[in-house]
Image 1 (cartoon, rainbow, N blue to C red):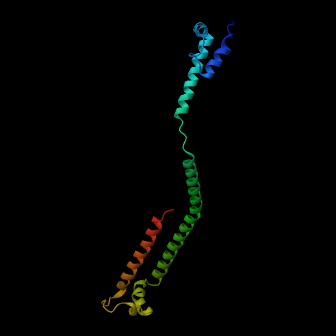
Image 2 (image 1 turned 180 degrees about the vertical axis):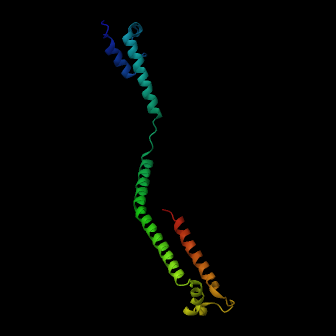
Image 3 (image 1 turned 180 degrees about the horizontal axis):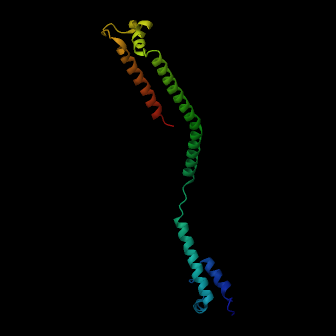
Length: 170
């Protein structure tokens, strides 16, 4: 026996890899392992690696194929929604900016011409003959206060549509 190799090492390695150590090993091999430092180190290292492998296999929990497929579909759908929503968000920002710019321009124009917007709103029912659409039971309202009902109805209608689209499932 040389200091670097042992003649019994291949036999011991075979028993360790099959998982038969020490139950199916001969008594002389067990006594040899107790006396040979290289073989005892081989037993300790191999058993430690095998124990770590069994523990890591027990800890690894693979999900079912159905849940993997579902997650892949969900990820694909979310990526498609994200790709579509970027241009839409840009269009919304552009539209909001354009509306704000038009409102500022309109207010500046009205301010330069004397700011007669309230007089224009008050004369709008007579110009469009909207008095014929109002019920006869309503008292005659003065000024732009007759616009209160259509504005409230419009707000309720738009709010209902927004709530419907916000709650719609994707």
